[in-house]
Image (cartoon, rainbow, N blue to C red; front, side, top):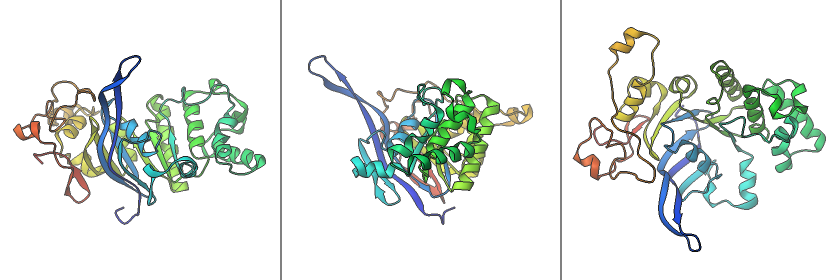
Length: 326
């Protein structure tokens, strides 16, 4: 995997949402530091999982990489092109190569449009083909997503949740993208449907040579699907490692706590597993603690953790962590 070229390179990416007060004259009184200095690479053809608790900045990271949110600062290189400096038509052309599958299949589809129009919209936006070629492409995309042709003239309310998510997948693939951000694409689905959607994503990746950033809560699903896993906490990455290394040898105390919370089907293994209890609650992104952001909940925190932010460093080949004690 290390021999593969880098497709997406993120360096010190920040996205802060200003908090303002006032009616006639608004002034900024703070900021929501949703993403605050994130750095990692995504290799061509791999799947990188991004996990963490709700509100830690996972979705904002994915959308900022795609420039759906313009970053406060930092760098995003896609195939060697700096996305943060692209505007207008230049950015629009690049967006044909980067797409997103949204989390909620009920809110991400226009209820007034037919499925054929929804799936074909990216083709019209990017002026790809004649109307006849676009209709044929829509048929191919529905077939790719394992949807029958009869769905083309139906509306989203006539489809189940799993079928709607397949429509979202077909729409994301319309322009033959290289890179797809999967923003919790299975969270809103039943467990049986989740497996079908994940299998479809794997099949499409093999067939179309896609690269995924897979954002999720389900650590067992991430272990099944992803090549490398990044763990996020309060706008920062705390650990990034190959899948097997992360699950068998987690180094950061937060990663250890997350994995210890995953239920095991075997009660004997559950009792034998080391218990890692994280005290307290997740802080707000408005009120970020100084030093290491995890130190108020960390079981091994020392005085240095309260003052100095840990360095994001590689401690083993391919294994990155931000912790003073590792």
